[in-house]
Length: 239
View 1 (cartoon, helix red, strand yellow):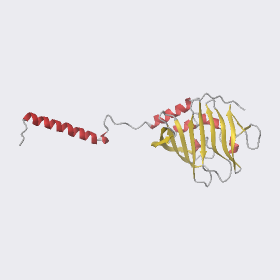
View 2: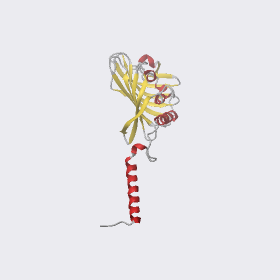
View 3: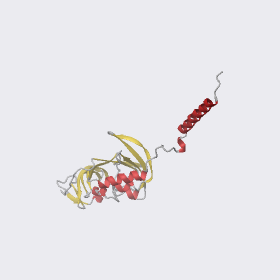
View 4: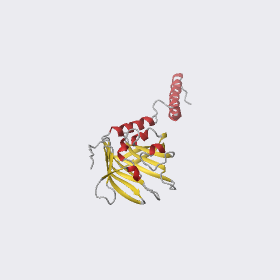
């Protein structure tokens, strides 16, 4: 039988106490230890993304939907370069009288120029007459793309997804139809739209997905917007 001296007994008790304390600390994650990581401040994340969008000289954007209305005119997509002149140059996909077409568009100096189907040259148009927005207005810090980020209600981090070589963090919330309508005119001003925002590791907006009622009797429709090629030196002029 091994007998412990008083000194050794004290040492054993001390070691056991330290080990127990370490074990309890490892199991006590819910108590919020000093080294625990904190969730990102969502408002700060969205504000940083908005500021980056507003500060960039240009950005390439695409917009698309897999749905279309059974009648009437509507914008179905866009692909082009947006600058903070503000200006846009690219194509806008529209449905006009039941037929869809990719329309070359240049919007600059407050005028929208389009080469409509069966016309040989650009003409100045009112995009609202074709159910389309003025794409240059997407650069407006208040009513454009970036303005949506800080108006996202109930925003919460919803996951991560791979986008090419990067991992994008997604944030989900809702937007009122009145805010969506300047971007997608077929939105209902009184509606509510589920929105998913994608932010890359550098804090830059990469994707925006908006789902809700856009076309009569079509149920929920989803529009996907993507943004890349930030900061190119682009100057857009009227055709």
